[in-house]
Amino acid sequence: MNQGARIAEGDILLFLHSDTLLMPGGLAMIEAFIAQTGIVAGSFCLRFDHQSPFLRLYARFSRINHILFTYGDQGLFMTRRIFEQVDGFPELPLMEDVEIQESLRKIGRFVKIRHPVVTSARRFLSNGIIRQQLLNTGLVLLYHAGVSPARLKRFYND
Image 1 (cartoon, rainbow, N blue to C red):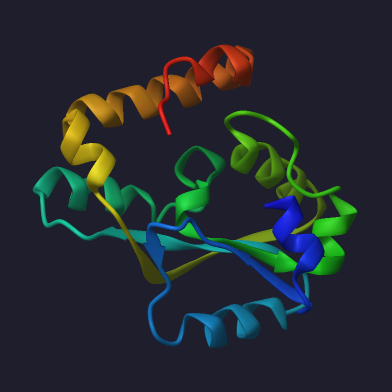
Image 2 (tube, rainbow, N blue to C red; image 1 turned 90 degrees about the vertical axis):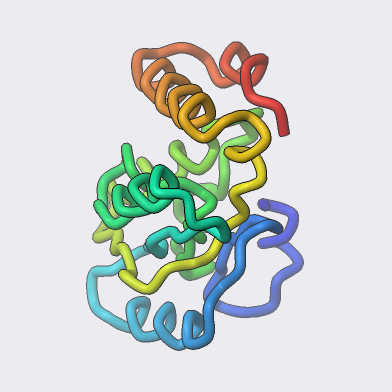
């Protein structure tokens, strides 16, 4: 992601996972939010490309603008200036999205756009929806409890 930011030519950076789609109008929404005073960064709500009730419930939690409910698959955006101010993404094997978010939230307002991005349910469907969500939740809680990303990475396959 840092390499991508280095070669990007625009003033606004959007970090979007390769299995996540930005819906029509998404770029205009980013520009409108970034133009507001005090907003340093943000993300979108989440929707999955599968209609499981459990995934819909999980997606509802992505509406909450809190670090425990906001991750890289929701499309993180910020200006280049802000990205450089926080020194980009930390070079971590996992949780780099959580780390940069902590830095961003310290320097200004982080917004959550109610318009969703659509992401793949592939990992949830192949590993079991509840099992994958329990793993994700456990990893995040362990990370916030101080377990290193290198140790956590052993439990999370790309």
